[in-house]
Image (cartoon, rainbow, N blue to C red; front, side):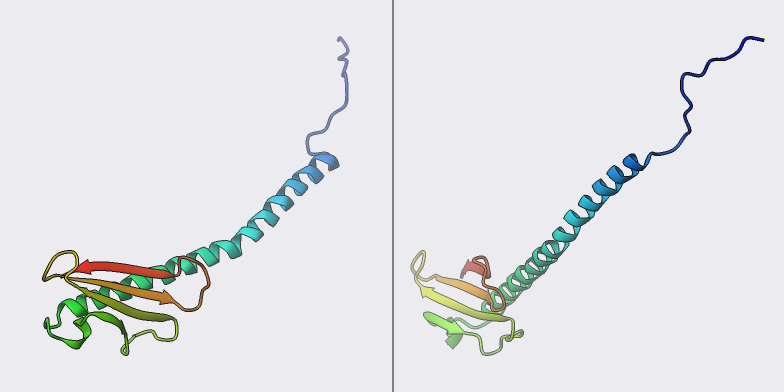
Length: 130
């Protein structure tokens, strides 16, 4: 029977170097993901705050639309909201301009400012005419 010649003895499995390289790559990936998690939470919180601010602005517009045209809240000028539903996180105000864009119409701009953030996009503004 002919004798088989084996070129090299090899066992299946990983070498210690391969295991260390895989562990290093896994560790770097884990560190990167850990650094992204707090930022993702900040972005989600900010999006929730902006969504709430938009909802408060829309609610105020609907409230103002339901008022009679001679109501004090619809006089020209800037008005603060004494009935702000979430006063510790948001400030709501609106500005009424008479005869804008045409005679007999009112321009109403409602602004809701998020008070617990210092970013430049911490104001939701809604403009309507009636």
